[in-house]
Image (tube, rainbow, N blue to C red; front, side, top):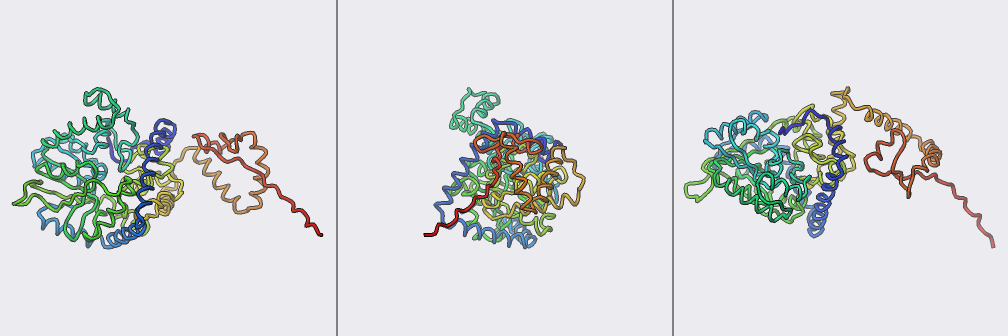
Length: 476
């Protein structure tokens, strides 16, 4: 299970996603419910937009002096008793973690939810070293049982129904088939609890790292992150360099907006603060704590004045839920750890040319920018990446249909500069296209325009404007 983009192109995988009507139904249902919850929690919190502005200012400040804050964070963590390793790339991070697990003599590792460990392909590396790795977030556990990568940043199993999960658990866990969510959750909880008690090493991601105090904030809903970070004797936290924020007093601004945008809750169930390993007088906690701070292409993003804004991302996943592209094709079509609008930005920088097509996987409608809790201008960054890719690799091999469609758009753009000509052509085309229209919409368009309607999208029927003559004024 590779975390980076696969060799199959995005255009081909997205075509398969669009053709899967059952997948589209599941995505529409799940993302629709999510957006309803987000709208409700935002409506009852008038300070939401002011908190977004505050959070953005904090991230802008943190990214602007990232080197200074990372040094402060490292010093404070080490003073608290943690061991800090700064990894330049995924390979260094993997090797360090595998060596820590080997030195601990652990044969089993429990993992809390972490997209960063997906990014560095940690699970396959540990498995090659003879270590069993168990995902403990319910969604991650489900996709691990299926041998898949997560389909969503926050909701890994968003592409599955409760019936799919019931069949999976019957096959993999040997329980009687059921589609009752409570029963399925209970079955997973019982299985995972045994593993928590026996694992020698726990691994989690990090939501925020507070430089002022050397504290890691881990935000979750299931308690699995808390168990992964406290029960095993050795705890490893993995974070990207962009997760650092200056002060503890900055955190409440993020807590106010993250859950409301990411899951539609007022606040997540658990907010964990981890500063170091177990102290002399502590009753529990890990005896050893390691923090891996990962670059892996993020410094290159930082150096680009446009791209650096993407480092503000909180990984809330909200931009996926509103994206018309993601909602029709699902996360697996992106062939990358990070799908959706934000994934289309970070993936080319983390995984290179294999993800070069992803910035083009957007309608640029702006819904992602509107919902982002820190107001990242995602469409602007995508346009920047498209320009950069076209300059760096002008000879991208697009399918013939895409080339034809692009040529048609170019011709339309030229024609649109002359409104009178465009109106004349519309008037002439309207009667020709009238036979294709039903109830004011065209379900099938002729020629190259057929690509628009081929996958279930309707197009408003063209109507020729008629000049209305004004009645002469009556004089009394």
